[in-house]
Amino acid sequence: MFLYWVFIKSLNKETITRRKHLLFNIGLYVAMLTLILGNVARTSNAVWTDINMEMSSSRAFGEFLNSVEPYRDAIIVPEPDFLLESLPYYAKNRIYLPREHRFGTTVSWTTEANYRLSLGELLSVARGIKTLYGQSVLIVLGHWHLDIGMLTNTSLARRNIHLTKVFRGMPMSLWISTTVYGDEKYRVYTIR
Image (cartoon, rainbow, N blue to C red):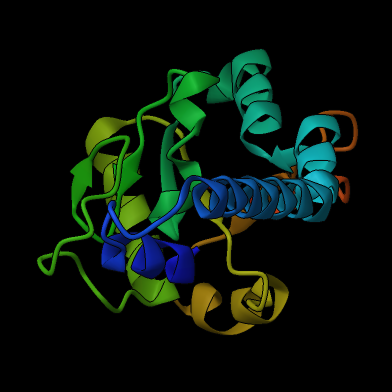
């Protein structure tokens, strides 16, 4: 494509014959068609996956929030915060963005946001929100490398905070759906 563009820009309209112009157009359109069909063939699996598989847990989580009475008006505290930008399409729960210290539905990506946020700080923020607003608070963790069981026994026990897992994607068993193909998978905990 780039070479065709350079060739077109370098040509003087008067120096090209009608036959060369026809051959040039045929070559250009064949190259374009080959490029487009090649990309369609390469992306067919991605398109098929996107159409037929669940790419996010947000819809299932929204249905869970709407169907379970204690969590219908719970405040959601996500980490990382961008994972739940699609949740407002499925549930009306307020979302508190702990890195930005504000309620919102979209992440700002500013330098004023807290770049480093420990699990202890996240729990302190969630507990403060629960105390301040008197509502259930659900912590949504998208970091799969964290071992909550291990953290509960050490740092969480010292803070006298007990987390209970309440959601992992599938409404039937309340555990994460292994059929979610995208990266919007998370675990949801409530503070007791």
